[in-house]
Image (cartoon, rainbow, N blue to C red; front, side):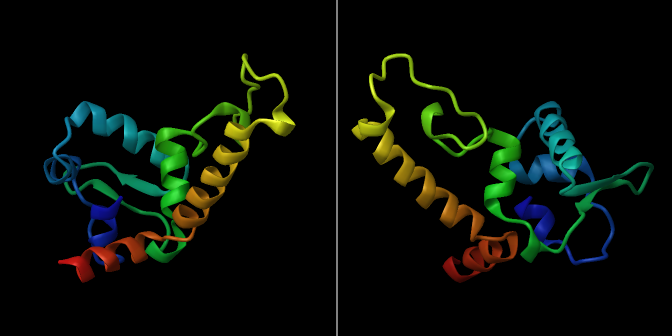
Length: 131
């Protein structure tokens, strides 16, 4: 997604082979990821000789948190604090007083705050500033 975000808006689609080479990932693995991202509405695919992929929204309107949730699933490290995939821990006696659950909820909240507050545009700008 960061690679697609570097492409000029309205430019030609980026071929899958170029994305795979840039990301150094196998094409078959990338196909699965791109299919999930397309289904989630983050990218458009174009068929044909000049086909490929491009972002469906401006880079400042796509957060890293959204992308990670599509590709990796919930941000929570344990299921008992997940907002989208809650599951009680089998060995937990009392969720309300569980110190691990309380700490993990804070980790989830801070992770979400940072990732949801960082757009593709922000991430690419940070990459440029670090270079």
